[in-house]
Length: 474
Ligand code: 5AD
Ligand code: SF4
Image (cartoon, rainbow, N blue to C red):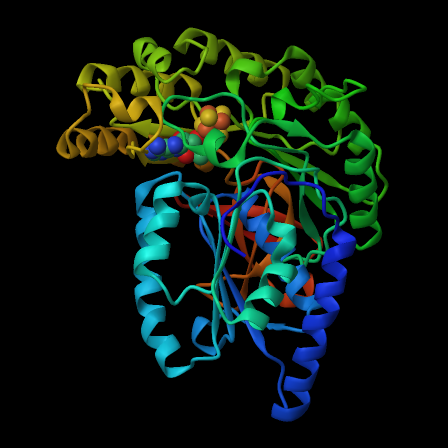
């Protein structure tokens, strides 16, 4: 099966069920002969959207009779769910593939699949075809649900299977999924992006914006609640434009109110919000819905108006700050976090000064900071005034120097306060501690046993670091 499908969306999940059972038969034979299941390992690069797609891949793999492992060296089937937002994520995939070439020479039965955003780019695809011939299966962002068919075709034919679609079909509802946590889950509310920020590859690899219907979303959230889920995170590239294009128009604020009414769900989070579309209606819904967490991730990217315009962000520094002030006025305890990019074409010290000014005024509780990465095919890639690495690194350090003391100071103010923390896992640094999150998304470590995982624990904050809090159960 080679080439690009012209008309996606005609085949249904029913067809995949047939392939699921055919592969399951093979895996059962293997298990009986070898005394162990075949193991699959899914490695995720990039954002929460990809992490959630990987949960769906794992769901299908489980139905096909695979066991799962986190260790690549133990796996019989390795899938890289790739990202292409920045170049270093792509380089890591190529690096890993180089390593797997040797592994596959030792273990010829091993299967390797690549999927996700990077595969939607023709140049990356060509590189895989030419230089990484040990890859068995390649698919993209629009046809993830066809994994069983593609795998079966590869097993039967013994040759590589490439199946990349250039646009979306129908939204595939009801895919099985294996959640990383039993008590919290992500829910896609929309796919794709229409914003075309000039630096960003996402609209080219994830397609146009399309929203799931409120009925489908509510049905999924109710099912999750029945399954013991207490916290849902609603996912979309720009949740604030949710509902455009639906037959029965529903705004994101309305959707939040609907989900707020689902019994069993105790916390609702969402990401990401585009500042240009954040409405007063949404701020009121957040303030009024008890289950909606006091946290909003609102990527600012830059503070200089000329840069924001070149980025095609459709807001000014002043408008952004006005939005942040409105949020804080309606919900004084609401954490605002952000994404910041430095080194965009034309950004010198003066432009970075504006970003630092926003940081000081918005007082972010946290931020992901990135150095601009030139993405072929985006308008920014051909802008003339690309910035030197040295200049970008200087801006990066200046931005961190502005951010960190503010984050630390906001954390310090929490010492002595009591929070309900949803206990998530045993702390990686010390097994006698549990790590969880507050309503405002602060990370908290406290002494406790694994029996607490999945429950809300009252914790008094006793100490703080820049990126986390330490507390004790009360
Ligand atoms: N270079 C660096 N960072 C990028 N982002 C998106 N595209 C690029 C790029 N070309 C960042 C933005 C976005 C986050 C998800 O990734 O800050 O908000
Ligand atoms: Fe990329 Fe902008 Fe869309 Fe976010 S809103 S995915 S940064 S184009």
